[in-house]
Image 1 (cartoon, rainbow, N blue to C red):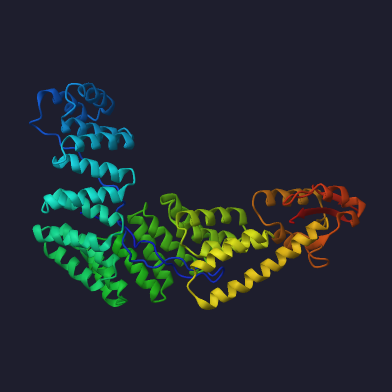
Image 2 (image 1 turned 180 degrees about the vertical axis):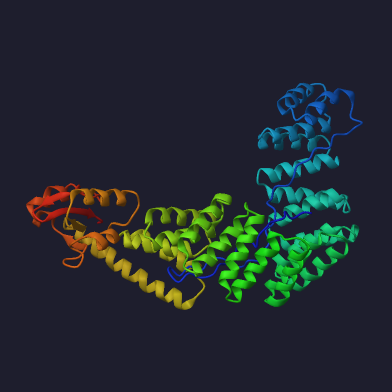
Length: 500
């Protein structure tokens, strides 16, 4: 099987949150595909020359350092033997030296371009270092001479899948099916590919063919359920998932059942079923992610946060999980940590719009108008909605006005402060520490300050020389983002934070 099995419904778009306009995931039925790297194998010829036998024994025993030393020692006497360079490339990969492996496999290919294993090893090594296009070109050249070579076809298909070259991968799979029509794994992979390409009826047909040829019945029923779900045929999907679980309870089918329950508004049952799926596949990040989304919809935010954190522990490369966790953190005003997750999301998927929207909001709330404008501008480029684009244009215009106002005030020597007053020095110091840990000064002051309902938290711009002498020295020393220590006054303790 060319696709790896995954225990969940994959990532794409999630359900929306009523808090920060969160809309990030696309489906619970998408299937994952392999990466550009392939499983590297080295053929150990049982009829290899005697001078190779010691190296082969070391390789079979996984003594990679010993095998490397042995092969390097053989280079002088056998520099034109592609088998030596093929083995050396394999050993270098096991030792974590991919660039050295590319060099060795290139040497094997240069010595004998017609050697089938030399071509395969070079293609695999190029894929290992991220040169998927070069690898695929090499394999295509090999297929011109050997169009029915099974290993070339399988590796080409794996690489095409990893590079999301769907039409090419489908053509290669159909060639494999033509040559080996009774191989159920190829039909199963074709079904996964067609499902990933939104050809749901073709996917159903391929999954059924795989089942006829002896593929795992529980798996094929689960996959058929995903295809029916993708087509919006919820009852047919639920029937397929239940048939799968009747054969063998499995996380694919249980995750699918949970999704149908959610779509029917049966949120409690969806949560229970997702938890059953997780019991069978506790390391599945997608199931945790999808559970988190249902928990958000039922306002069980602490449980949802735990689910998203566990999903990220299992799959730190998920931009959607970073985004969803960030939204929950923003809702409880853990701004600093939320910002970190939003930035991770933009790094992992620069085309995901929502992180930029939230980063713009954070920067605007922190009076960093230039950063806010840049984030909103990026969001506007990615969002596909005329009304939203118009709304963001209005936001950017207002931010530019505020930025100009800020620059003029700063040029006059004024500073922009937030303030709070509490009864005890202990409470004031506790608030300062909370802000340093990432909480929002304004939000805390709104909750704790005795001034919140009197003069407010935001003082606006003011001339520091015009403030009370009691506060003047401390305020004049403040840099942007800094806070004063607690300042004792007659009726309590003050803390100021400079924001501009």
